[in-house]
Length: 170
Image (cartoon, rainbow, N blue to C red; front, side):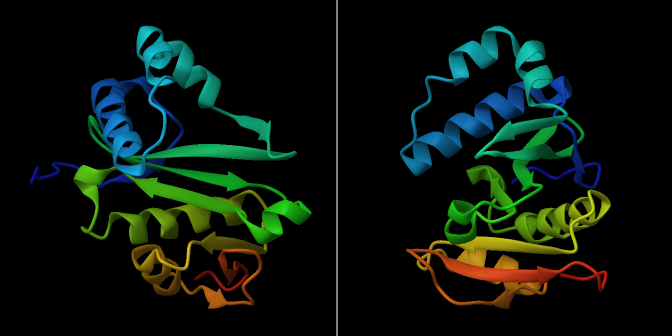
């Protein structure tokens, strides 16, 4: 296990973590069974890839912002905040999605990353946030509950949790 010299923090995507980002995302894609083809173009023009990830962009028919959780030159994971919800995102996806790369899992990083993400969501003007997760993903359920998530009804195949962002916690 690598000892981090600086505490992790949530930042806009940065070229400073090129090697660990590409390594971590490849490991995550392989572990999750996702396609790794996108990593080739990202590695060929990493500065361009980073630039394309920064700022408010649009996907899922809503504006969203991407943040990376980093400690020095180490990339630990990604957090996405969707600024609005569509009927589809109310069932699957919610306002906030996150993942920690395999090498950094089970060390409390997801809990701290989500806490930092809730602060960013408040800064963006959200007063409540919906998070969803697969019913078999006990780790994510614990992360959401540790950050004050309140269970809601299950729609589709996802568990749903609401976070009241007005209180300053969860």
